[in-house]
Image (cartoon, rainbow, N blue to C red; front, side):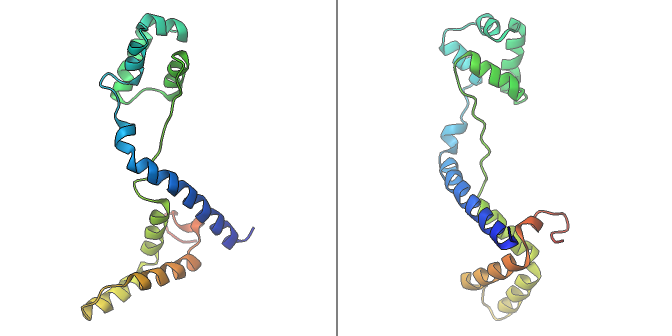
Length: 161
């Protein structure tokens, strides 16, 4: 597969992920509000299940469940422990990684950063003339940068090569 074909495939993958990411970002507040006592303790309590009952269903001691609930509240619970607790309470464990901005925007910013010498030079000349870099010029520069800097080079320490 050619470099161009791989970049097109990555762009399509970014586009699909960006649609999901956009929805997640717009609903992040509702999704990320954990109950005060943590999910494990709150769901366990809502089910009417004691720590000892959950421990028995997980094959652990009551003190191990108490530690799990404490670790979850502290943000240091192990994924496997949370998965086992979820299973024992007939729940699904969902872990989300939500980009702060679209993946395409991140790639475009990085590409412009690496391609920055030309961008900075154009911006400097235009600022001397009391102008700013137009969105059209930015798009042209992005196309040039995309041809010059493949996706596979974007995140290397040196940026290229």
